[in-house]
Image (cartoon, rainbow, N blue to C red; front, side, top):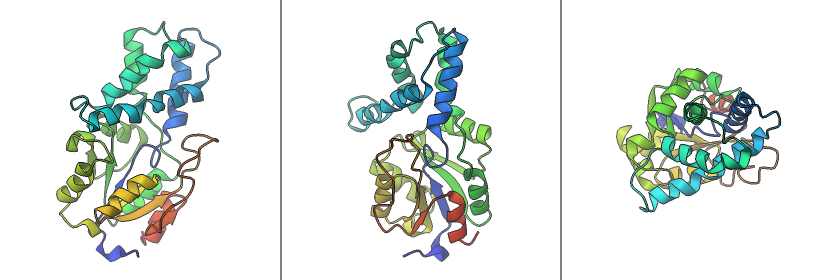
Length: 239
């Protein structure tokens, strides 16, 4: 049951919950393709293929198969893997590096800035993301996201859903789990937050992975808040 009087901080999953990574990366991919003369380019397929390598590479780090590595490096590794598949071999290294920074320039969902700004009037608002510190700072500037703090994988030197991330956030934010509300579009993330005592807010993003999305189409538990937008979360939190 929601106890808004205890909440002091609202932390947000970022990729997919706050920003629309798929359409943003698809647009940047098309731009890069056009710069080398490719007139036909499937930006959506490119974004999907790039994202498909994200979780497996993070898992290698979580499983101890490789040392701590930021997701900027992981993104670049995956980009190099898929470049031949999409005819982008002619991209010079500076262009590839700029394309890799597309993840620093992701656009927010239409409700994100307004909803987070409303919550910020009453609560501390922070990222809670597997993104790198630099990536999230740049994304915030680009998207106009009004964070009070940046909690991220670089801070914890771990990737969600590792326990270190959730316990680390609780420790840094005062040690009282019920004072923290985790807002996310991903049921697994909320489940982990709840396990460690956080309050939870589910925001439905049924097109995060495009029209054929098969996961996170609805809340799969009785989260304290179930909403269709961050503005609706702000409504429920009386902001």
